[in-house]
Length: 294
Image 1: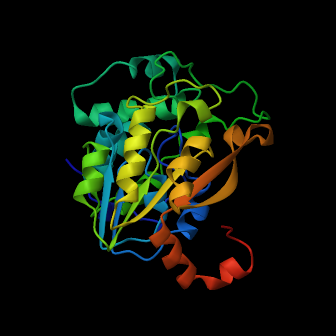
Image 2: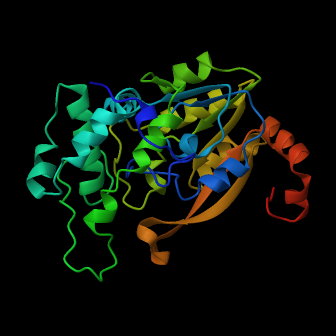
């Protein structure tokens, strides 16, 4: 039997991300959202863990898209069958055998969603294509790693399920999505797989990567949109040529992987000229205070 959302008390905003997902923007979501100009519809062609969508105010029309069928199935099942999925996860032991079993595909959508969640939280690291990741366990209660009892807290999933109500969940080609939803009242936020040369390990981390040619094609497409357009990435000479040389504005923030200051990275966000003008008109105080820089 499908459990409805009304059967559980809901919080207004998810307290933490539903998935440990490579490239997640959960920690820097406030920075990203601060740079969103007003819009009526919102589109994420490279949805991933949906960190920005889950933390932003609702728009009249919202569309989440990703090519990875695993993450798309997870959000669909969580939205449509939250009680069944959360109950199945509650009965899932934190065990190496369970983790290893979850590396195998499942035909049933509910079981596939459960296994996807298990792999996300029980594995070390967040690389989606590395099926040889190690099982995560904690040997000392006083260590720096959070114990399973905290990692396996599922209460936030009800709020995630509620937030995804009314969101169009799709599994299409990102370039087609961008063309299909281009509209002056839309905001298209792109968080594509970053350029390999800008990553520390310089290796594939997603099931569907973008080649350098894809990044060139994406930039050309975004530059020609009627919609507001923003794209995340690490600063690079290529992106400077593709965006900044065409009038796009880059803003930056610091982020840390594994909560370690030794792993600090500079995250960048590029705004189209139209988006930048709209934002400056909306929040002149921020620019006067030097919070945002051209």
